[in-house]
Length: 365
Image (cartoon, rainbow, N blue to C red):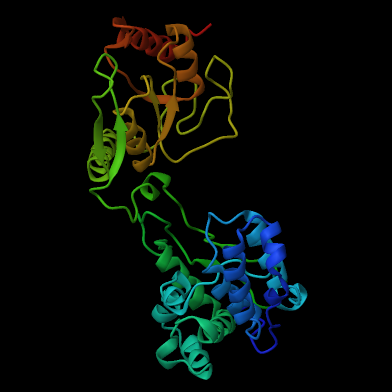
């Protein structure tokens, strides 16, 4: 609709709906009369404007058949090939000015955009105030994005919180946002060609520190006793885990299984040796724990440190844990003394210690 312009939009056909049809669709005589009067009053308006006015008189309590009947009649003359799909929801000018697209128009400082925005009779790079002005702005924005793609996509990246040029950033690092050759055929573009994304950083970017991140209850406590952790607390704990791993040298390569090259996973055999087609820049840190709230910052901290988590069920026997330590090339293991099951304490650390000894000695069957 924005790209097609408004000069050729057809008029509403809603006035063709009779009171009898509205009553047949489920309305009372009085409600059918009121809606028919509204439909007649918008008959000379363009179909999209008419629908905005007409839909404001519709309510969820009206049968769906009434909504559909008026919608189809309103857009009876609408040519989808020329104008796109007939819109169901249309923001008013104030709402349009508050959209992300309008805010983008106001904040983008590209000279190509400024020139096109002014050429579309828009002061200062885009009003974004809805209606025809928004349509003009949107066409100008599209033209400027084609003329100055580097600036356009850089601004998209900035507003999305992705910073390809900042090392260690949460979104990406290393290189430009978009790499392309204007003379090359379409489809040859490369997005964030050298960037790296730390998914744990993405969990925190743009989020309020005092917002609730985790809610849980503990086994053995009353059902109505609930614990919570804010995003700031979660980040602090995850950072502490990451710092400890880095200080221990566990953000680099390393393998606990005998014969496993540093920084590489095993081949899948229980012997833990052999070549692998998988690799990582970080160490593998095994986690043998029940899935509790305390595990969440642990997993996030491992990823923040650039390491990889090897998840192993706490119910396994030592031999099964050892096999997975070797296959996963774990350089370290995080566990706890015991686990509580139905009020009973079951040993966990002793099983993990025995498994680690087997994996390190290469004595896995």
